[in-house]
Length: 319
Ligand code: PMV
Image (cartoon, rainbow, N blue to C red; front, side, top):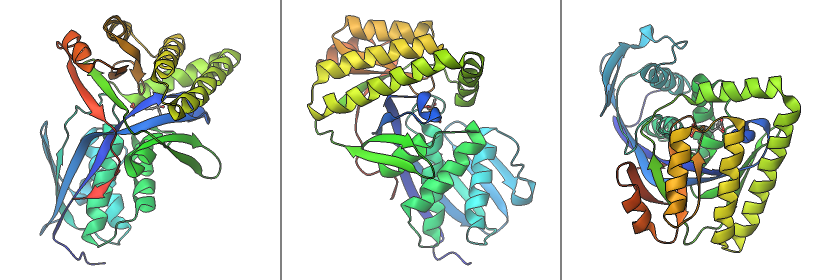
């Protein structure tokens, strides 16, 4: 099929996991929020059969016949992803792909899913198609290349936007929108990038070695997440903060936190936060804090990359 446009631009929000990370891989519920730090992807058609990728961090190009889908390097995943999306339209176009991200890749804020969703939206829009379900499925496939067995929570939130409860159910997934009005967060990036797949694999090993203990943890995570839905409904942010701390302690017991993340949580709590926890896979990445006095928190954490994030309502969109 021939494209109907020569260029296109789309964006998708990054995200935080408020509750339930890791256990969501094993069918327990999680709460996620899309945040107003969007990843922008521009694509334009080339008149050769190369993919040329440009980001703030690197520039790479490849002939489309040389793409090796087994390589897990970020650029290669983007190339493979672009190739697969074009294949949906029986197309073998060369493309310029330009990616702009306001947060570092690997910072635990769902940059990989947001990039894949924005890429899928930008490329399908070349053919005048904008279908969120299709973008979700393409993003999920891309996440499988990166993480092996993702829960699907990241693709879901960056496609839908908002605040949602997510649960992997068979044969599909349950995505329940939650109300959020005046909710926002302070996000602190630890400065340490990490590969989600490594941490997810460590958790799987723990689960295989100690299934009974893992089940206790998973049930605790579910209980915390379901309680959080209730307190969110009541806008009871004191209780929400306490649940965040309980969730962080649980993730610590699971072995996915580290000294730096614990220290960031401690600094947040010593500076008036209602709650704080690591967000996403852990082992680095970011901490999320809930605070009434955000300035105090921003000041206390000024040596780190720290910002206030509002919830993004739109999800993936064409620009
Ligand atoms: O690394 P992040 O922020 O994309 O989070 C991964 C979330 C996990 O629950 C650890 C894995 C998953 O697939 O849901």
